[in-house]
Amino acid sequence: MGPAALQRYKKLLLEKRRELSSTQDDTRARVPAGGGLQADLIDEANAEAELQIRLPRTDGRLLRAIEEALGRIRQGTYGICGVCNQPISRARLEAVPLTHYCRTRKERKQSNGAVEGRVRAYVVARCRSADRESAGSQDGR
Image (cartoon, rainbow, N blue to C red; front, side, top):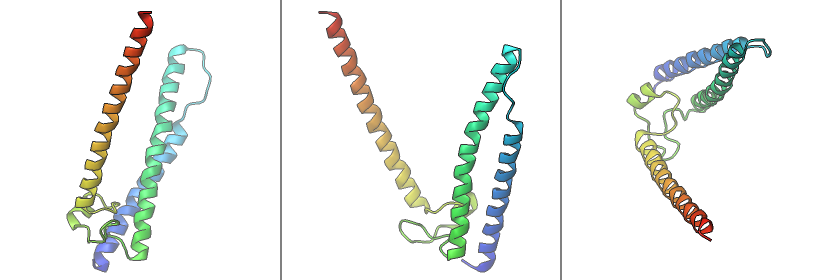
């Protein structure tokens, strides 16, 4: 990848980092103070505060991913898949500039995760079924 393309991706990543940082600052500023006399206002404030606690977690993950991508630019490994060491397509980098997987590796990772999720769901369902059967047999004593 040429220096002009790297500079372009670096600019995109820095802009996204700035956006997330300003969003986090806005979120912190809007967290409501505790207290108040009306239950509706308290409930609304609690719901808003809970949402504002969750958003920074997601933003924090994105900021870490952006910092990692900027680090790969500095190291000269940006645009190279972290698994197979093959170049990541420009189309993928345009869509997800902070990625460190090529499309093939990302799809494999997602499909493996989907299989693991289905297996986990099956095991949970079987355990619940066994628990119900056990509870039913205890009721019948």
